[in-house]
Image 1: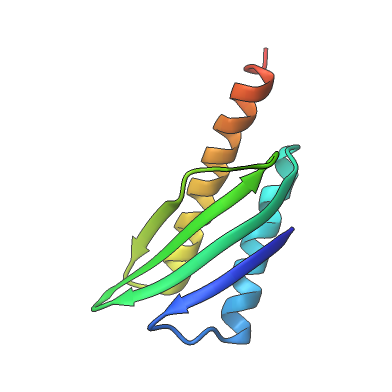
Image 2: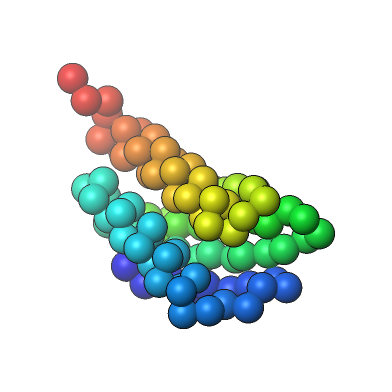
Length: 98
C-alpha cells in the first residue's frame, strides 16, 4: 500500500516513517483492496494527534483522528480506528459474516 506521511510541527524521522508503515501494513490483511493512505501527524501544545484517511475500492473512507500525549500511542490508536473503519466498510460491501 502506498501512503503519504506529513507533519505539522513534527519532524518526520525515519523511525516515525517506519512505525507508520508497519502499522498501515497490518490493514492490508482485511481482504479489501486498500490502495493508499494519507497520514498527518500534528503537535498542538501537549496534545499529539495522528489523522488518517484510507482509499479503499476507489473511495475515501472518513478521516479519523486519534490523540495522545505520545506520538507512537496516537499512531497506534489511529491504526486501531482505521482497522475498525475498514472492517465496517467490508461488512457493508459484502454483508456480515455468518
